[in-house]
Length: 528
Image 1 (cartoon, helix red, strand yellow):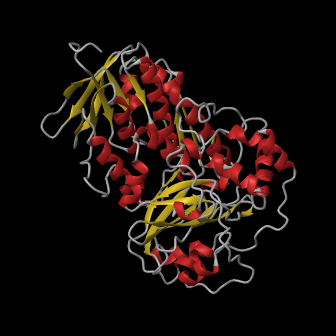
Image 2 (cartoon, rainbow, N blue to C red; image 1 turned 30 degrees about the vertical axis):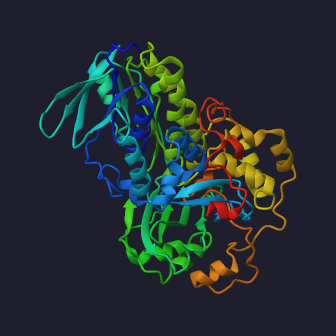
């Protein structure tokens, strides 16, 4: 850019995690205004526009690596603020549809903390960047421009209704409640297709005081997932240790088996899932909050990339696709897509003709992967509505079910399972010859019969030591605070729809410890 040329201006609608990461990427090329309807807290506090923040949020290693590449050092910032970096499967006790997965050495990791803390650390970094400003308590009313070009937004601010904010590029990051389709239709843009798959899932969360000494010893994430192969409502229960010595407990149930806001029913529900361990761990613990309940968790995808979008516009994050939160995909999908946009912008520049449409297409592969993983499972539950599985899905489901069975006894398959579920590589990894070799020999012979908590963990939690429970450090399971391993393991993984996570185009894929500042540790203690 010539020194005499005015710097370009970009508007990001929404101060969500996706919006903030987008602002960080755009700040390399333009001044950026982030517009949000709420006041943006200075610390880890709730935001009215993010009610789902009350529930369990895990950032998988695939997403954490992507954010680390956008904001170097952010992982250290999170842990200094109180977040916990957890080794997977070392620090995880999870029962998948096929059984308990042993807790072996680190294959992947996640970041465990409240969503408020996670966002606050990113927000502090991004709003401190040169050229990034915010317009708070302000609501976008419409896009300004035509069907061929977006030139800005009309905003209702506390001081002025219908204020025009001009921009060279407008990005919608306003989330599940996005009105982008309506705005674009008002400009004359048509043919924006929407798809939805709804299992009727409801989830309920309550925070408890953790037992004394549990955080200090690195008490694991514990979760029990449902089994979509059984024609009954899918129910799950999860405990995630978060900051300030707290346990965040989340329950979920699909149509016909949903949890409620009744505090007296919370622990009984947890004890009634496929294994009672979560309810047993919560029994006698001091609750610190009421029960928060959220409905409206359908998988929804808007195919912006297939429409004739006007130049100067694209959408990111939940504005493009929302997923059943139990799979824990949303933040990682958004981060990896935005990282792909960064690669595109660095190659072509913000002023390249059609850059918005190209950015939308760059995001699509990451979205497609998560969409296939989530919807192929959710449609199996009783009463689920939406598009039916594509031909051949049953065969793929059978293969992945066998892979997951093997993951209960074969460390190589545990690693393969986690590599995909944490969004560290494409699902096509599951049909790599080395993985297929192990799948063909998969067996549950010798699989764990009880939750693999160590004797020390059972003691600190106040549980009697169960006969046959493993007492060594190797137990634990897959990704799962929320039921991410639950169904996500299944279908679509080998469909090839997901070209993006493993492309090597700066999408945050797993490049190995030597190139990964937050990658798998050599020793368990490093991940505590």
